[in-house]
Length: 237
Ligand code: ADP
Ligand code: ADP
Image (cartoon, rainbow, N blue to C red):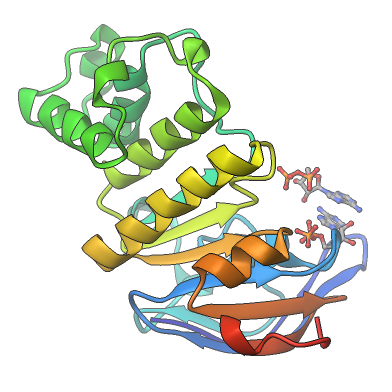
């Protein structure tokens, strides 16, 4: 469960990107965060895994105050939260399976990761994750030979191999064509339903948000202006 209690965020240059955010997100929810460019969507989801620090209020994840985490505990906490980006962030010159396995590197002795000597169990789990997103047949293909939609699925598989409880996705389908975007949204929804992973997606396509999410949060100039079922989104956003 993620709880924002009077959370604000002011960037070092003095710009207040989040203003008194109060939200509770239950385990297993599928949430779309919508709003114009610059509204604060990216800042909002990036506070959850501490890519950005909040400057006021309290943010807790499963009862843990995220601002109190540091060192090894912060790294462990981040490992339970998957992050997906618009630009996929893959190592394009290497194979799909190696990209998925990089999610394991922090757990391996450095020299083993360097040699690519991953335990068999990790390799099997990586293949299983690729199977879950329907691209098992691409496991040994170089990542740069895949289409955008396939690359985003690799990113999703890499995140699944971390066994996350939460997946944060920052405009994951913004650079995909409409058909591929829907396929990737289908993957997010299936993963959400089958694995009870909480999914928070920033998305500027309101139609996709309404079609896929259970709950829609509308952000405008750093404030929550709508929070409710997708079926009731109105002019507020
Ligand atoms: P969105 O994801 O909705 O497009 P962002 O969260 O990226 O919005 O940005 C919200 C606001 O905060 C924007 O006005 C942006 O310019 C500003 N902002 C983002 N990052 C920084 C930063 N590092 N320093 C100062 N301002 C920032
Ligand atoms: P992304 O789409 O990956 O979030 P952005 O282009 O929104 O990338 O932002 C890239 C980087 O620039 C981020 O670290 C963000 O915090 C920072 N940034 C965005 N807007 C501003 C701003 N107005 N002032 C300073 N830094 C900013």
